[in-house]
Each structure stands twice: as C-alpha cells, then as structure tokens.
Amino acid sequence: MAKSAFSPAYFHPRYWLTWLAIGAMYTAAWLPWPMKIGCGKAIGRLAWRLAKRRRRITETNIALCFPDKTAVEQATLVKETFLANGIGLIETATAWCRNAEDLRHRVSRINQDHLSRALVHKRGVLVIGIHFSTLDLGGALHSLFYPADVVYRPHNNPLFDHFMTRARSRTFGRTIDRHDLRGVVRHLKAGRIVWYSPDQDFGRDVSVFAPFFGQQAATIKLTAKIARMTGAPVVPMMFHRNPDNRSYTIEWLPALENFPSGDEVADASRINTIIEQAILKHPEQYLWLHRRFKTRPPGEEKIY
Image (cartoon, rainbow, N blue to C red; front, side, top):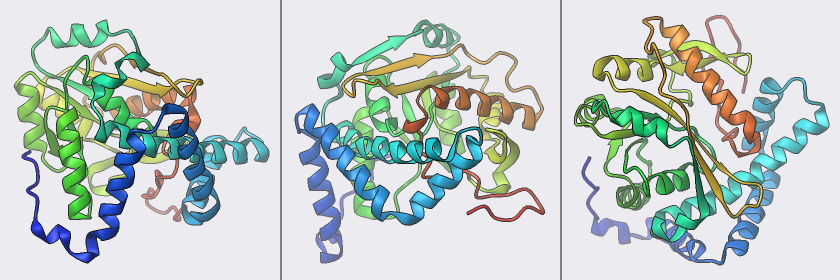
C-alpha cells in the first residue's frame, strides 16, 4: 500500500491538536530512557484515574479471564495494565520517530532459527503478532533482523493516519490495509514476511467463537484462510518488555504444524491458546483496554 499523500488541508485549525500530539510524540521519542518510563507511568496513572470507561472495560476483561485471582489481585493487575500501556504510548512514539538501529542494543532474541527455517520454504511467512503495549516497538526491533510487511487498521483522523503510515513504512517494508486480503496474499506469495495480529474482535461476519481464557470470543477466521490460500508457514512471535523496563525480548515459536486443519473452530482455538500462553508471561502488558468480548454468541447478553 502506498504512503498516504500529505494534504494542505492538514494545516486547518481542526488539526492543530493532532499536530500538538505529533509534536509531543517526537519530543517523547528523544527523552532519556528513565524519563520515558516515568512519563509513560504518569500517563498510565492519569488514564487509570480519568478514563473510566476504559477502566471498566479492563476490569471486566480481567475479571472474566482471571477468575481465580482475588479482587485485590485483579485490581492490581488493572492498574499495572494502565501503567504498562502508558509506557507503551512512549514506546510507540520512539518506534515511529526514531531509527530502530538506535535501539538494537536493547533487544535480545530467542529461537530465531524457527523463523529462519520457515523462510527456507520461500512461500513467505505469516508472523502472528499480539496486541501488547509494546506492539509497534516490537515491530521496529523485529525489522532489524527480519524486514516484514504489516497489516494495519487505518486511523480515522487523516492527518494522524498519514503520520502513522509514514512512520510504519520506515520501519516495515509495506503497510497493508486489514481489508486488503489480496495484498496480504500477494506479498506472501512473493516470499515476504507479513506481520499480522488476529487477537481483536472484528465482528460476527468474519469470526467463529473459540475459547479465550475460558470465555467464548469472536476469533477471526482469516489466519487459517491466508495460510490455506498461500501455503505460507505461520510463525507465532512474542515480544515483551523485560522487568528492568530498559530491554526487550523477541521470541519466535515453531511454525504451526498441520495448520490449517480444515476445522475453523479448532484452528481459531489453537491460535487463541498460543496468544494466552504469551499473555500469561506478562499479563499486564496486554491490551486489556480493548473490548475483546464485544461480540457475543447468539442468545448471550452484552458484556460491556
């Protein structure tokens, strides 16, 4: 997908707040690392106090997915999630506004050979990413070792979408609209790596219901469909911020065997299980602020 063109209309006063946000991101990207973490935590604390709707969504998700935790433990995880996602905003700014090469010393790799072996088949590789707060920084650091194209959702604000797409185009090979299935297939058949995150609720029409932390979750069918159409190996990838808040770890898992199986629910369940295992390593870094259980099976009441 080509970069979106800059429009003179972006100088209109209605975009001034967007320009301010972009300027703040550039500033945050160049802060010393301890200040980045401090600012991120401050943003997280503020959001935890003021973003009441998102806090309720997060509380609901964590109560559903971690019923064995006490009320105090759940509340602690909710707050830690906001802190981690506040840091994630600063990490995103860093990924979008700086050269990934500046951050090479901060990343460690585990089981890189799983991706290397998948590439030998020359059918492209579908890398399964996960919506952690570190998502964009993970993409930037992944690109240091394996350039990849990325499937993304365009932003509703045209100026911010231009900024975001341009930034991601510097990090990734190409950006592909999430509705552009042909583009995904074309890039994989050309032997490229495509980074794809299937762990959000895209609605009933494109999903099946599969277990996710013991709850029935609308899980997109596209992962298996893409693998079937292209023959591309599917390689799950985990990316986490380490406890020191200064370094990161990329871990690749083995390419999925016998995938797709022909059973949409079984395939979706398998993907969800892998995502669960990644989340359990650092549950506070996941995007629990998303309405993961928005779409319900027939007959069930809305959760949020």
